Length: 296
Ligand SMILES: NC(=O)c1ccc[n+]([C@@H]2O[C@H](COP(=O)([O-])OP(=O)(O)OC[C@H]3O[C@@H](n4cnc5c(N)ncnc54)[C@H](O)[C@@H]3O)[C@@H](O)[C@H]2O)c1
Ligand SMILES: [Zn+2]
Image (cartoon, rainbow, N blue to C red; front, side, top):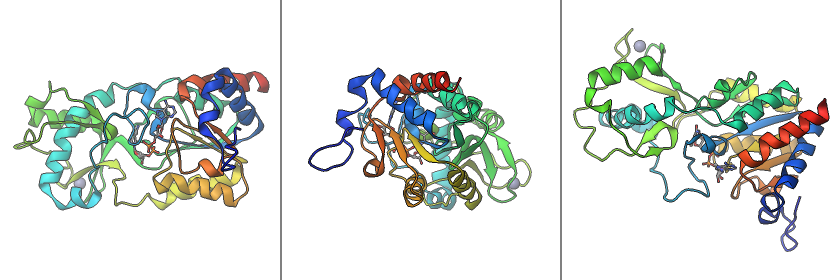
């Protein structure tokens, strides 16, 4: 780890990227020496083409995400949400896991993880074959009825969306985080939102909106994994959202080392025993391959 001599804190600018392969070797050393709880964020999916919220690569601030209260409280808000999402889903559905998702699955196969916890809603860890997985904020690939709790796949719901709104089938727009798309305002006027096929109730994507709590069972499962782990590995998260940051706090309280690989500052930097400022695609697959060699 590089330390800034004036602050005594890990110096992100001085570690990782400058040394290239050195960063991968450093990370491999950490991976091989611990059974880690892996916590991932939007940064692991940017190589798959999904934008993050607070990334160093962003040109403009993304729009404020819709809150749970807005979505539930207004038909107009739901129309706007689903109109934008009807366009954004096409790109989301075509997105594939990248080598970093595969590397996390490989790390699990090697027995070097105690579990994988993601803040992402893109389903890419699941699709990359990771088994012990908690998706803290849910999965965009499902929708749930707010009244009878029936679930429908997003694929089937998307077909119903486009059947009711055929003009949206061919629309293309800039991709935004969370399967959203930058639709010109006004275009959603007249957009028709399908209801639950069982009870006629309001459908919501099966993800946690801002203003909503993460289900307790998910947090408890993740905390149990942390108890059984001997380190925490954070991959591609600014840790600005508390539901992810809490695992750093819990690891520190338990005296477990924290490693963070992220481009740009994170809220956990001061607590990190290993802090690598690097693109995940450049270091993680290489580090896992090195750790696999060491484990063989
Ligand atoms: N893919 C998704 O499912 C997705 C995308 C955007 C936002 N979200 C939601 O937004 C919230 C945001 O929290 P967060 O901390 O996950 O995201 P965040 O946007 O706050 O932070 C992502 C971090 O990853 C870094 N990063 C981007 N690409 C990287 C790369 N290739 N290698 C290394 N670092 C990279 C960014 O610079 C940034 O610091 C979460 O609640 C999540 O549910 C999800
Ligand atoms: Zn219903």
